[in-house]
Length: 328
Image (cartoon, rainbow, N blue to C red; front, side, top):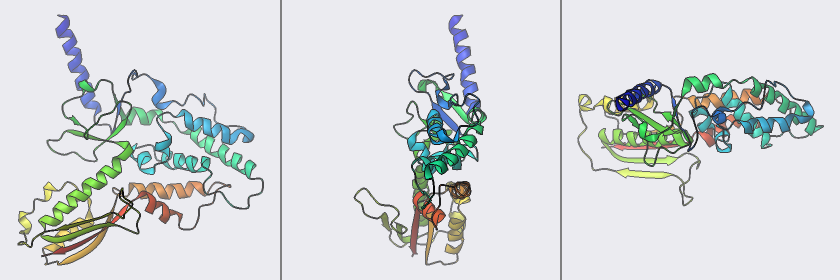
Protein backbone atom coordinates (compact mmCIF):
# COMPACT_ATOMS: atom_id res chain seq x y z
CA UNK A 1 0.00 0.00 0.00
CA UNK A 2 2.67 2.51 1.04
CA UNK A 3 4.82 1.62 -1.96
CA UNK A 4 1.99 2.15 -4.43
CA UNK A 5 1.01 5.44 -2.79
CA UNK A 6 4.60 6.67 -2.94
CA UNK A 7 4.85 5.58 -6.55
CA UNK A 8 1.70 7.52 -7.40
CA UNK A 9 3.10 10.67 -5.84
CA UNK A 10 6.31 10.22 -7.83
CA UNK A 11 4.34 9.88 -11.06
CA UNK A 12 2.37 13.02 -10.26
CA UNK A 13 5.58 14.86 -9.47
CA UNK A 14 7.07 13.70 -12.75
CA UNK A 15 4.01 14.90 -14.68
CA UNK A 16 4.11 18.28 -12.94
CA UNK A 17 7.79 18.60 -13.80
CA UNK A 18 7.14 17.71 -17.44
CA UNK A 19 4.48 20.41 -17.67
CA UNK A 20 6.81 22.99 -16.15
CA UNK A 21 9.47 22.25 -18.79
CA UNK A 22 7.68 24.68 -21.08
CA UNK A 23 9.50 27.41 -19.13
CA UNK A 24 12.71 28.67 -20.76
CA UNK A 25 15.00 28.19 -17.74
CA UNK A 26 15.90 25.24 -15.57
CA UNK A 27 17.70 25.72 -12.26
CA UNK A 28 19.43 22.72 -10.68
CA UNK A 29 19.33 23.26 -6.94
CA UNK A 30 22.66 23.25 -5.15
CA UNK A 31 23.42 20.63 -2.51
CA UNK A 32 21.37 21.38 0.60
CA UNK A 33 19.26 23.99 -1.20
CA UNK A 34 15.47 23.68 -1.27
CA UNK A 35 12.96 25.13 -3.71
CA UNK A 36 11.69 27.45 -0.97
CA UNK A 37 15.17 28.85 -0.39
CA UNK A 38 15.00 32.61 -1.14
CA UNK A 39 18.69 32.71 -2.00
CA UNK A 40 17.92 32.50 -5.70
CA UNK A 41 16.09 35.78 -5.86
CA UNK A 42 16.79 37.74 -2.71
CA UNK A 43 15.49 41.27 -2.84
CA UNK A 44 14.91 41.41 0.90
CA UNK A 45 17.63 44.05 1.31
CA UNK A 46 15.23 46.63 -0.09
CA UNK A 47 12.61 45.84 2.59
CA UNK A 48 10.19 48.22 0.92
CA UNK A 49 12.90 50.85 0.50
CA UNK A 50 12.64 52.65 -2.84
CA UNK A 51 15.08 55.52 -2.29
CA UNK A 52 18.34 56.34 -0.50
CA UNK A 53 20.11 59.45 0.70
CA UNK A 54 22.32 60.89 -2.02
CA UNK A 55 25.36 60.78 0.27
CA UNK A 56 25.00 56.96 0.56
CA UNK A 57 23.90 56.37 -3.02
CA UNK A 58 26.88 54.42 -4.34
CA UNK A 59 27.32 52.39 -1.14
CA UNK A 60 23.65 51.36 -1.05
CA UNK A 61 23.63 50.56 -4.77
CA UNK A 62 26.62 48.24 -4.37
CA UNK A 63 24.95 46.44 -1.43
CA UNK A 64 21.68 46.11 -3.33
CA UNK A 65 23.19 44.57 -6.46
CA UNK A 66 25.24 42.14 -4.36
CA UNK A 67 22.05 40.99 -2.61
CA UNK A 68 20.70 39.53 -5.84
CA UNK A 69 22.40 36.18 -5.41
CA UNK A 70 21.37 34.71 -8.75
CA UNK A 71 23.37 37.49 -10.42
CA UNK A 72 27.05 36.71 -9.90
CA UNK A 73 29.90 39.06 -10.79
CA UNK A 74 30.56 36.90 -13.84
CA UNK A 75 26.92 37.13 -14.90
CA UNK A 76 26.48 40.86 -14.55
CA UNK A 77 29.73 41.39 -16.45
CA UNK A 78 28.43 39.37 -19.40
CA UNK A 79 25.74 40.69 -21.67
CA UNK A 80 25.21 37.26 -23.30
CA UNK A 81 24.61 35.66 -19.87
CA UNK A 82 22.15 38.37 -18.82
CA UNK A 83 20.32 37.93 -22.13
CA UNK A 84 20.31 34.13 -21.82
CA UNK A 85 18.59 34.49 -18.45
CA UNK A 86 15.51 35.84 -20.28
CA UNK A 87 15.27 38.67 -17.76
CA UNK A 88 12.53 41.30 -18.09
CA UNK A 89 13.33 43.91 -20.74
CA UNK A 90 14.43 46.70 -18.40
CA UNK A 91 16.57 44.45 -16.19
CA UNK A 92 19.36 43.63 -18.66
CA UNK A 93 20.46 47.17 -19.56
CA UNK A 94 19.99 48.18 -15.91
CA UNK A 95 22.26 45.42 -14.54
CA UNK A 96 24.88 46.09 -17.22
CA UNK A 97 24.82 49.84 -16.56
CA UNK A 98 25.15 49.31 -12.80
CA UNK A 99 28.14 47.04 -13.38
CA UNK A 100 29.95 49.56 -15.59
CA UNK A 101 29.06 52.36 -13.16
CA UNK A 102 30.44 50.52 -10.12
CA UNK A 103 33.56 49.62 -12.12
CA UNK A 104 33.98 53.38 -12.79
CA UNK A 105 34.01 52.89 -16.53
CA UNK A 106 33.14 55.67 -19.00
CA UNK A 107 33.49 58.42 -16.39
CA UNK A 108 32.76 61.85 -17.82
CA UNK A 109 35.99 63.92 -17.85
CA UNK A 110 36.24 67.31 -16.17
CA UNK A 111 33.35 66.82 -13.75
CA UNK A 112 32.92 69.35 -10.96
CA UNK A 113 32.21 67.61 -7.64
CA UNK A 114 32.45 64.10 -9.15
CA UNK A 115 31.63 62.30 -5.85
CA UNK A 116 28.31 64.07 -5.52
CA UNK A 117 27.45 63.46 -9.16
CA UNK A 118 28.26 59.74 -8.85
CA UNK A 119 26.10 59.47 -5.74
CA UNK A 120 23.31 61.24 -7.59
CA UNK A 121 23.53 58.72 -10.44
CA UNK A 122 23.80 55.83 -7.95
CA UNK A 123 20.60 57.00 -6.30
CA UNK A 124 18.85 57.05 -9.68
CA UNK A 125 20.04 53.51 -10.46
CA UNK A 126 19.08 52.31 -6.97
CA UNK A 127 15.53 53.60 -7.41
CA UNK A 128 15.21 51.77 -10.73
CA UNK A 129 16.62 48.60 -9.20
CA UNK A 130 14.24 48.79 -6.23
CA UNK A 131 11.28 49.09 -8.60
CA UNK A 132 12.34 45.99 -10.50
CA UNK A 133 10.19 43.09 -9.35
CA UNK A 134 11.88 39.87 -10.46
CA UNK A 135 9.58 37.49 -8.58
CA UNK A 136 7.05 37.14 -11.45
CA UNK A 137 9.89 36.53 -13.90
CA UNK A 138 11.31 33.77 -11.71
CA UNK A 139 7.91 32.12 -11.24
CA UNK A 140 7.05 32.24 -14.93
CA UNK A 141 10.47 31.48 -16.39
CA UNK A 142 12.33 29.12 -14.05
CA UNK A 143 11.76 25.46 -13.28
CA UNK A 144 13.60 24.21 -10.20
CA UNK A 145 14.80 20.62 -9.93
CA UNK A 146 16.28 19.15 -6.80
CA UNK A 147 17.32 15.58 -7.52
CA UNK A 148 19.13 14.98 -10.79
CA UNK A 149 18.00 11.37 -10.78
CA UNK A 150 14.34 12.46 -10.89
CA UNK A 151 14.63 14.30 -14.19
CA UNK A 152 12.43 12.95 -17.00
CA UNK A 153 14.20 10.87 -19.61
CA UNK A 154 13.51 13.47 -22.31
CA UNK A 155 15.61 16.14 -20.53
CA UNK A 156 19.13 16.39 -21.96
CA UNK A 157 22.27 18.41 -21.22
CA UNK A 158 25.72 18.80 -22.78
CA UNK A 159 28.48 16.44 -21.56
CA UNK A 160 29.54 16.95 -17.91
CA UNK A 161 26.22 18.63 -17.12
CA UNK A 162 24.01 19.29 -15.24
CA UNK A 163 25.92 20.84 -12.34
CA UNK A 164 24.13 21.65 -9.04
CA UNK A 165 23.71 25.37 -8.47
CA UNK A 166 23.70 26.28 -12.17
CA UNK A 167 21.03 27.78 -14.39
CA UNK A 168 20.26 26.33 -17.81
CA UNK A 169 18.29 27.66 -20.75
CA UNK A 170 16.12 25.59 -23.05
CA UNK A 171 17.27 25.14 -26.62
CA UNK A 172 15.68 27.85 -28.80
CA UNK A 173 13.40 25.44 -30.65
CA UNK A 174 12.18 21.87 -30.43
CA UNK A 175 14.09 19.10 -32.14
CA UNK A 176 12.08 16.00 -32.95
CA UNK A 177 13.17 12.92 -31.01
CA UNK A 178 15.60 14.96 -28.85
CA UNK A 179 13.18 16.03 -26.13
CA UNK A 180 14.13 18.98 -23.95
CA UNK A 181 17.70 20.14 -24.46
CA UNK A 182 19.27 22.61 -22.00
CA UNK A 183 22.50 24.59 -22.31
CA UNK A 184 24.16 26.43 -19.37
CA UNK A 185 23.39 30.16 -19.47
CA UNK A 186 27.08 30.83 -18.78
CA UNK A 187 27.94 29.93 -22.39
CA UNK A 188 24.53 29.57 -24.02
CA UNK A 189 25.17 31.88 -26.98
CA UNK A 190 28.73 30.67 -27.57
CA UNK A 191 27.55 27.04 -27.69
CA UNK A 192 24.82 27.95 -30.17
CA UNK A 193 27.42 29.86 -32.19
CA UNK A 194 29.66 26.81 -32.53
CA UNK A 195 26.69 24.61 -33.32
CA UNK A 196 25.50 26.98 -36.05
CA UNK A 197 28.98 27.04 -37.53
CA UNK A 198 29.10 23.25 -37.68
CA UNK A 199 25.73 23.12 -39.39
CA UNK A 200 26.82 25.80 -41.86
CA UNK A 201 29.94 23.80 -42.76
CA UNK A 202 27.81 20.71 -43.38
CA UNK A 203 25.34 22.68 -45.50
CA UNK A 204 28.07 24.25 -47.65
CA UNK A 205 29.74 20.87 -48.10
CA UNK A 206 26.45 19.34 -49.20
CA UNK A 207 26.08 22.21 -51.69
CA UNK A 208 29.35 21.17 -53.32
CA UNK A 209 31.89 23.46 -51.64
CA UNK A 210 35.51 22.67 -52.50
CA UNK A 211 37.01 25.15 -50.04
CA UNK A 212 35.59 26.88 -46.95
CA UNK A 213 37.56 29.49 -45.00
CA UNK A 214 36.18 30.76 -41.69
CA UNK A 215 38.02 33.51 -39.84
CA UNK A 216 37.36 36.13 -37.23
CA UNK A 217 36.69 39.68 -38.36
CA UNK A 218 39.22 42.37 -37.33
CA UNK A 219 40.98 39.98 -34.94
CA UNK A 220 38.14 40.07 -32.39
CA UNK A 221 38.66 36.37 -31.62
CA UNK A 222 41.85 34.54 -30.75
CA UNK A 223 42.68 30.90 -30.16
CA UNK A 224 44.39 29.53 -27.06
CA UNK A 225 47.81 30.23 -28.58
CA UNK A 226 46.91 33.87 -29.27
CA UNK A 227 46.46 33.42 -33.00
CA UNK A 228 43.43 34.76 -34.85
CA UNK A 229 40.49 32.40 -35.24
CA UNK A 230 40.76 30.66 -38.63
CA UNK A 231 39.55 27.35 -40.03
CA UNK A 232 40.03 25.97 -43.53
CA UNK A 233 38.16 23.01 -45.05
CA UNK A 234 38.94 21.57 -48.48
CA UNK A 235 36.98 18.93 -50.39
CA UNK A 236 37.34 17.10 -53.68
CA UNK A 237 35.10 18.39 -56.49
CA UNK A 238 31.84 16.47 -56.85
CA UNK A 239 28.59 16.84 -58.78
CA UNK A 240 26.08 19.36 -57.51
CA UNK A 241 23.20 17.70 -55.70
CA UNK A 242 19.79 18.39 -57.21
CA UNK A 243 17.78 21.01 -55.25
CA UNK A 244 15.06 18.53 -54.35
CA UNK A 245 17.71 16.15 -52.94
CA UNK A 246 18.75 18.63 -50.23
CA UNK A 247 16.93 17.76 -47.02
CA UNK A 248 16.15 21.29 -45.88
CA UNK A 249 14.45 20.02 -42.72
CA UNK A 250 17.71 18.36 -41.71
CA UNK A 251 19.28 21.78 -41.12
CA UNK A 252 17.73 23.09 -37.92
CA UNK A 253 19.11 26.62 -38.25
CA UNK A 254 18.47 27.18 -41.96
CA UNK A 255 14.94 28.50 -41.40
CA UNK A 256 16.33 31.25 -39.14
CA UNK A 257 19.27 32.28 -41.35
CA UNK A 258 18.18 34.36 -44.39
CA UNK A 259 21.77 34.61 -45.66
CA UNK A 260 22.12 30.84 -45.69
CA UNK A 261 18.85 30.55 -47.59
CA UNK A 262 20.18 32.97 -50.21
CA UNK A 263 23.35 30.88 -50.57
CA UNK A 264 21.25 27.76 -51.15
CA UNK A 265 19.11 29.47 -53.78
CA UNK A 266 22.08 31.01 -55.59
CA UNK A 267 24.04 27.78 -55.53
CA UNK A 268 21.40 26.11 -57.68
CA UNK A 269 21.86 29.00 -60.13
CA UNK A 270 25.49 27.93 -60.64
CA UNK A 271 27.03 30.08 -57.89
CA UNK A 272 30.83 29.57 -57.92
CA UNK A 273 32.02 31.56 -54.92
CA UNK A 274 30.64 33.76 -52.18
CA UNK A 275 31.73 35.67 -49.08
CA UNK A 276 29.47 36.58 -46.17
CA UNK A 277 29.49 37.03 -42.41
CA UNK A 278 27.65 35.54 -39.47
CA UNK A 279 27.90 36.24 -35.76
CA UNK A 280 27.03 34.98 -32.29
CA UNK A 281 23.78 36.95 -32.10
CA UNK A 282 20.63 34.86 -32.50
CA UNK A 283 17.82 36.76 -34.21
CA UNK A 284 19.26 40.11 -33.10
CA UNK A 285 18.52 39.79 -29.37
CA UNK A 286 22.01 40.93 -28.26
CA UNK A 287 22.01 43.97 -30.56
CA UNK A 288 18.65 45.01 -29.10
CA UNK A 289 20.09 44.96 -25.56
CA UNK A 290 23.11 47.04 -26.61
CA UNK A 291 20.81 49.73 -27.98
CA UNK A 292 18.88 49.78 -24.68
CA UNK A 293 22.12 50.21 -22.70
CA UNK A 294 23.02 53.25 -24.76
CA UNK A 295 19.69 54.89 -23.95
CA UNK A 296 19.96 54.26 -20.19
CA UNK A 297 23.53 55.53 -19.84
CA UNK A 298 22.63 58.78 -21.55
CA UNK A 299 20.48 59.65 -18.50
CA UNK A 300 23.47 59.64 -16.12
CA UNK A 301 25.45 62.80 -15.31
CA UNK A 302 28.73 61.14 -14.36
CA UNK A 303 29.11 58.84 -17.37
CA UNK A 304 29.80 59.59 -21.01
CA UNK A 305 29.84 56.94 -23.68
CA UNK A 306 32.61 57.41 -26.24
CA UNK A 307 31.89 57.86 -29.92
CA UNK A 308 31.29 54.53 -31.60
CA UNK A 309 30.38 52.85 -28.30
CA UNK A 310 27.65 50.68 -29.78
CA UNK A 311 29.92 49.47 -32.55
CA UNK A 312 32.74 48.72 -30.11
CA UNK A 313 30.44 46.83 -27.73
CA UNK A 314 28.93 44.87 -30.59
CA UNK A 315 32.41 43.87 -31.68
CA UNK A 316 33.30 42.82 -28.13
CA UNK A 317 30.10 40.91 -27.39
CA UNK A 318 28.90 39.66 -30.76
CA UNK A 319 31.75 37.69 -32.29
CA UNK A 320 31.66 38.00 -36.07
CA UNK A 321 33.17 35.52 -38.52
CA UNK A 322 33.79 35.86 -42.24
CA UNK A 323 32.89 32.92 -44.47
CA UNK A 324 34.60 32.50 -47.84
CA UNK A 325 33.37 29.65 -50.03
CA UNK A 326 34.45 28.24 -53.35
CA UNK A 327 32.28 25.71 -55.16
CA UNK A 328 33.25 23.12 -57.73
